[in-house]
Image (cartoon, rainbow, N blue to C red; front, side, top):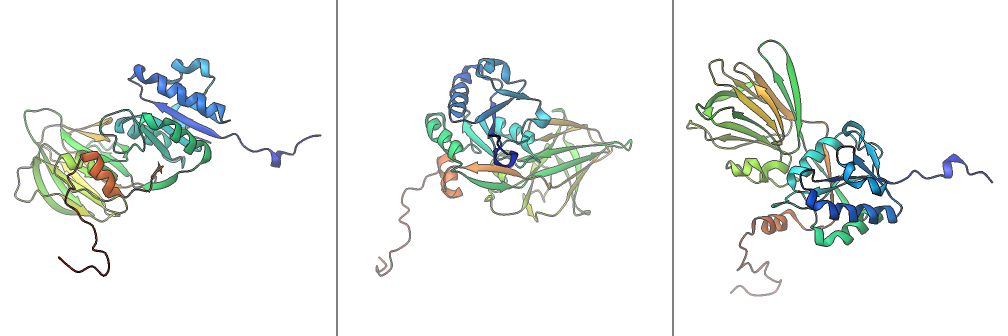
Length: 309
């Protein structure tokens, strides 16, 4: 008896992305692959990552199509690995689930010792999904050419050498705001507010707040405080003609040379990033845990009916 095409379900595929520079961590990735395959899921990997796992019979794809037809990307590494993975899955509507093998691991959802629970959540689809804002960068060169970039955390422009600060003129929605001599400038999403922007003195922005953050880096100016602006605003900055050369970074991993006279535009991207969550703990708890914040002495809300003491 033949089976109709409509009754045949599509194979479930998971893209597995390990930390590329840590061969000592290959064992945990291999264990995860075996458990996923034992549960009937198809595992896909990037061609550059697959050589260590040839014996596991994984699907192999190039980066531009690796996430296509996958229901999830399971990432083993720190925040840097997750940020690189976000670039791979953008536009494919595939959520990222991170297992932290790094230091801070702010974007990761679990640790290696909880691998069985992670695999069970993937197999049973027992996770929630958050949608995070991202940024588009456009760079316009003095010769009329242009290039572009994309970032989940932040776009930064920084001086290319230590000798001199770069000279920047900043505008919001095409209205000039200020000129700064600075080491650089960070344009951040709420997700990136706990990363480079936070280290540069910017505010922590809760993920459910739609906003963009602008943080000058060591600016020589009276008006050089961090700015929080609307999510649909455009941030423009120009490197003045007699300024030293600069470089733009997207999530600290993709660099673009920026000569004097170039103009940069940063805006909210239509391509968001999906993050898979295993826990329903509020963002406050994540801050307390990741930054080891002191919370001793907090008594909580007064129980109704209790008298004030």
